Length: 148
Image (cartoon, rainbow, N blue to C red):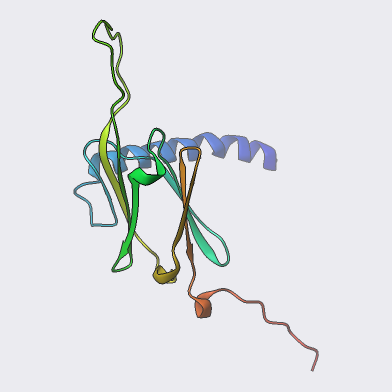
């Protein structure tokens, strides 16, 4: 029974993610300031939470490490940069052009439990990974229950 429910729910979750993504694309520049994206192109990102940190993974193919800037101001994380257009031969006749080039930025308000002073970023193989530790006193902790 559980397997049937899981199979039925999975397509609905995928649909909801896609609808959320579409609304995010359309309303990203006019929203409530939770997340801002540039008009040219906006790298896709995932944000997850662990016990002691938040992890943001962003796809930035074709952008060099030196072409990425990560800032934290007033508990808001902003990633910006530029993907430069590749040189094209004059004799090329393009049948389809889908890749976008130019400046980009993504801005995300960090959760209250984030320690904005200890943000770390790494870059490898076109993926930017930003780790934001949680404030020490906000981390979940287990309490041992003793027999009294």
